Amino acid sequence: MSEDRVLTQQLQHAAENYPELDTNLRGYETVEGLPESLREWAQTNPAAGIHEFEAAELHVAVIPTNNEQQAAFVVFDVAGIEAPSSEDWWYLLIITGVVGTLGVLGFGLGILVMRRAIAPVTQLAKAVENIDLEHLSAEDHKRIESSRFGDDEVGMLADTIEKTLERISAFVERERYFTSSASHELRTPITVITGALELLEQSDLSATDVKTLNRVRRATLDMKTTIEMFLCLSRETDDGLYNEMFLVMPLVSLAVDQQRYLLSGKFVDVEIDKHAKPIVYGHPQAFSIAVNNLVRNAFEHTLDGQGPITVRIKQDELLVTNQVSSDADDRHTPPEASSHGYGLGLGIVQRLCERNGWSFSLLSDEKRVIARLSW
Image 1 (cartoon, helix red, strand yellow):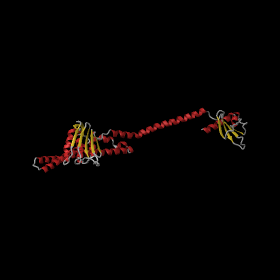
Image 2 (cartoon, helix red, strand yellow):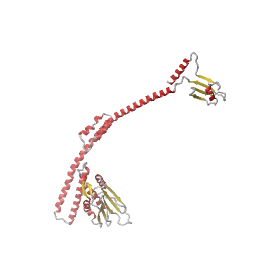
Image 3 (cartoon, rainbow, N blue to C red):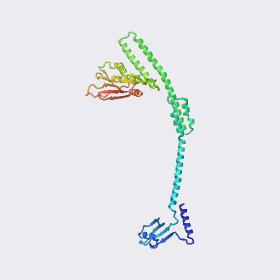
Image 4 (cartoon, rainbow, N blue to C red):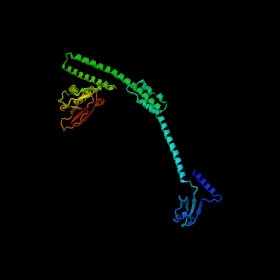
């Protein structure tokens, strides 16, 4: 367009001066022959190259010659040929408008295409969000059915989610069946053993038999409590058992009495330091098992003469402390807490605490081990 415009303007200028055809290009060998507007500039020995003079509408080429003191000049008069600046601005404005319009149209089209592309993903996300995983129904499976989303990547994702929900439903059903069956099958032998022990208590038993009977009774009670706790942990619902209110002191005293046989033959004192009478909200069986496990660990790992064992009850925490060294200069490595209390490790105690919103920590040094249960 620029080339055609320049040629057209030059031809039009020549037609207007017909029959005199003045050429726009002229050569000058001396400074005196140049147009008057260029003479002063030419006397400054300008460098070789192209120079433009917008006010005079002239383009000048400085050409070096054999005479080092003088150069030749080629002057191109663009008056009447070069388009005015306003025309350039109009072209620039038109080009900018076209590019801007195309940009806006492209942006709008991109948003439209993007929305149409992610619409199935949004629909799938809303369908998954409205699903109640604890109570899956046929309507939930219908809502996530993969056939509703086509055969593209979204359909593949919906199919995977659908199969996952089916597996979850099957797993929940198996878990419910197992807990309901195990609840009966595990409790029945415990009930039979308890009944047999009550009958044996009515018989004439020797001191050795009574001691053995007490051991069986304790093991049976431990097993019964453990079974009930594990069944409770395996269920999704707690049937309100985690919102019961109970006193801490009776459960601590019971745990100390039940585990005191572990100190038989050891000269170890047990001190219950009661600073408050706290009331805890949660699962009393879970709290009892946690306390029994901590007390059992303390009793098992306290050697003869390494005492006393201190159970300190505060308003918001329970501390069980046992000595592992009877002499300050005797450097013993503190033993690890037992993982056999009720068959439960400290990991299970941690889980019981997390389930009830309690916290558990174990601190040890060369002299003592402190188990801390707070609520």
